[in-house]
Length: 584
Image 1 (cartoon, one colour):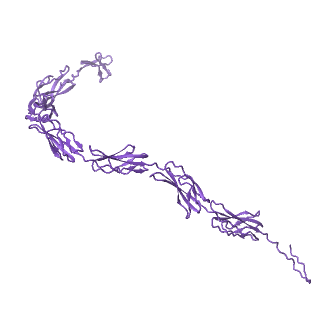
Image 2: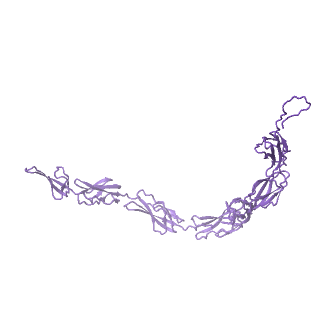
Image 3: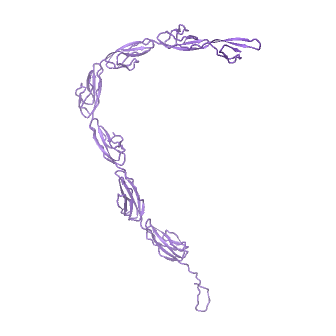
């Protein structure tokens, strides 16, 4: 059985290999007792010494020094003991176990040291610190002094091998494009001497400093020859800026022109040439670089005379403007009609979205300050004609006239016309332009092609056409002569039509009779089936289109066959006369 002090517990007090928990720091005595009945127990003890975990290591802040020695600043442990060691770089400790020991022999760059706190078998606690030994900065050289005429210059300090450089000055208003560049540009230099300091520093080491003096002379006034001019005259006034430092002088660079007072910033110029005339305004002051600028005075030619082209009439929403192409100047089309000008500066541009009616387009040719040349052109867009619709259908007639009807025209004018007619026909209309009219003169048989055309201005006309066919009256029918027959058929012989077509029909026949024609459409044909005696009334009809048909009837009488003849019996007689006995 295991036993121990208060607070300590065992996973199994009867197991020799029990797990013990609740141990306190320091010595913990445990007793293992083996007993057996009334026998004296056998007892043995074991001491478990629990150590405290070492303090968390803190090697102190990183340092930068310019020397070969430094003082470390690790924390002082209350539990465990500490020791310093070198991780990288070099260094010798005055006392490796002292948290605040001195270290010497530092190499240039980063030197990493570890502060380890240990306590017996407990895991040690570690941390590191970096001590960077900085090299002495490169000796600064700010370069040679300068004498200049501008408010800007470039400084010429040396490039640091060790450390970084920085320019500075106490002169107010001076700025650096890059104060860290040895060859920086400085701006805003005042007239007079300005001192610049080139400082090279490296970490904790003492800075290396060098000065240079830049003296700025009073530069000539910056030249401004004025705004370029465009004019239609041979004279002009130059407009250079007023000189406050130095003196100015006008010169002719190109073109032509006489400068009447070359040293006056507002001199007049005469005899200007056509085109560009370039003048230079130079302001000089002692040995400083002169300041120069130029101005161009363009003498313009009068613009080409504007010709907007001929007026147009169209039915489309698009058109092409045809103004003249300017030789001098540039053209511009404008309109207030709402139409869209595709390229207003093109002399022969397209136009879209033309409104109905008259649109005025103005072609203006301009050349700088010269008076403009202006002309205009109108484009009239007509309304498309009402679509043509003939309400009267194509038809045939036996009359000499035909009523015509077309749709009412709301846009444009409608006109009736004859497209074609039979030879010799003389046709006329009751009114050529009335939508409801009469076609007269249909005296010649044949087809009359009639057109209703609706037109409006230059718009494509709308047309529709019908055919009126003039038919002729049929030939007068003649069915032939009435006749009697004893046969079951009879040959009919009606007249042959010269106009129209003929056909036979049975008007009446005896009851139970079933007569029929061999060819009802042939004028000379057989009537068959005359098997029943009696009267057969037959009709010959000649028709031609819509004309009234001509009819003629013929009567064929079927006679009954005679009674079979019977002359009686043969006889022998001695008399000179004899009574015959034929049947009735």
